[in-house]
Image (cartoon, rainbow, N blue to C red):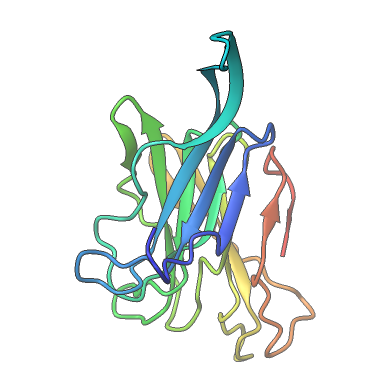
Length: 212
């Protein structure tokens, strides 16, 4: 880690507490300031020897694979502003609330990474609302179900029916055709300008309920 990486700005842990992910939205790329990244750690049993050479076991946190960062990340994307893990810790969600999408500044987006024999591999999918706009900040908050097949992205800067920064969220699901967006936006029926719904988000492990 380097100064101003901001690792720990976002955190997630598997239910059994053996895999953790730390988001670092301030991490610089080779030439991209605040591109962002995340690191995953696993709690492992390590054999050690005491002074009398008796075998002992202790638990240590070790980093699993390299840093997670999108290959197309750009300066100011801030990937790691929100993170999430599947129950087994082998699927990671990395959101960047400052990502520009189709010319829309700070619309925000997210990426999925899967751990395997070759380490962390990114999905080709870019999770971002098809109707997103500049300043929505989708990925300010994010959550994932236990299977890693359902994702919620909060966009507190989303304008709703002319109400500035009312905020909303979008749901994405993984299936045979890849990742697709649910057609309906999640927004409060009694929402008002400045509510910034989607500033934080959570989802149950079975994905049947969410809170914003």
